[in-house]
Image (cartoon, rainbow, N blue to C red):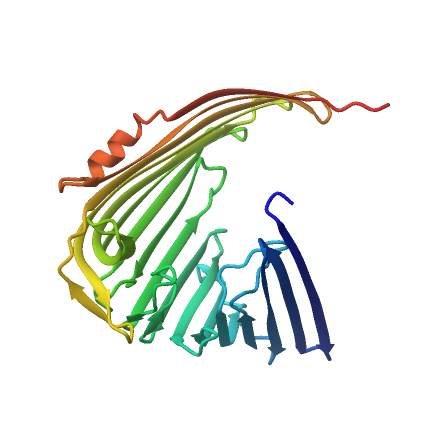
Length: 373
């Protein structure tokens, strides 16, 4: 009532198991929303067909449709509207590898897909290959390679037209090393490349992340993760110096730190710490106008450089007074600062200055007690 909004949503799910090798599942959804005198209604559907070809091979066909006015926020999460997606995938699982192999199993997946919106605009086609591997030491490894054909980005301008984008490439690698033989350390790391802007393959985003974890004991665990990213073709929809929204390319640098600890003091006490800090700078490279067909045209309008820093820090203590009854004490501090204007922003300075942010500082106490009558 506060929003003058009435929403009716409905869904129907279906599953059909055909023998032991074929599984067909589908769903249909619909929404009707009346808000402030406006009425919108739309529908969506998905279909997934899984077929076991043999003990090693399987194939899958997946189709998704999401109408432009469909609103699923009343009973689910909807990543985007106005979307049609079709993917075919074939996968192979390899087990029974030689005893002296460091690998316990591999799963290969090969996929082709296409994406359109409801107006018939082709967003992009894609091909991808990935492999997930389990190692005999308890660790795992994953990589993925993908290529995207030229197409359109119909979301970045926030409803101000679709942008024609070139062919793109994507690569990702991830590795996890567990604790071994009662050791103290575990480790995970990943690296990513993606060409997400207008320059195509060869320019884009390079990101690496590493996270060591130290187990001081079975009750005390400490970790710290550091991520560094460089993107020399970062495409954004931002206000220009005249205050009007403008498509522009930026040269971006970012540092991200996450760290924390978990200490199970005893069976009734727990202490947790968590820290996250971000420093980012972006230098304006080129502003773009759009032709009627969505092709970017270099603009003479000036864009400002900008910098961003953020901090989040929390210490939380929990004490169990009785079963399902707890006392919580938390200290929370955080802040965010966005700056734009004259050149000179530096990612190192933004990251270092993040630790001085104090927009919010709180000490919270919570008492939870369970009783029966």
